[in-house]
Image 1 (cartoon, rainbow, N blue to C red):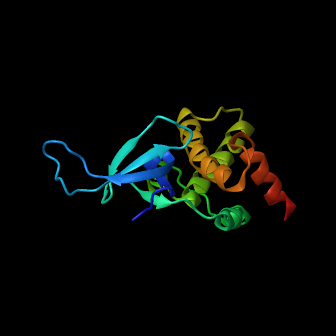
Image 2 (cartoon, helix red, strand yellow; image 1 turned 60 degrees about the horizontal axis):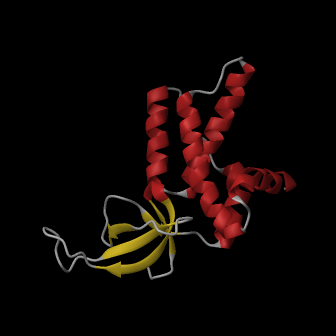
Length: 167
């Protein structure tokens, strides 16, 4: 169970702070069922109520600063998604996003960067599907890394590139 004050990753909502645990006084809901009260990062008034025992959405602790630094160091070794079929690749993108795992976000980002480069070399534009999943993966990954490393989210890509090139 998470404690009040903990920061967690909550599905595709992203970073949330646990504001407390409560029960709900509503018809049809067991009176003893516990719910987290979550506040999405960057929102003052926003609240999400989700069951403590939520089997539908991923909830995980935010990684540590050391984990974040190690992850950036490991980026060159993280494999891309080598799937030629567009529909199968999109399904894999969805699966990676649902996992809420940082390494899976990196796999999406690396795959799409390579695809963009190859398409530009052939005089083609990036696909709308790739563009959409790239944005989601970057948002998810960069939000967490930004919070941990104290680097603004909009500077995260250049920060990561500089760290990798330093090796």
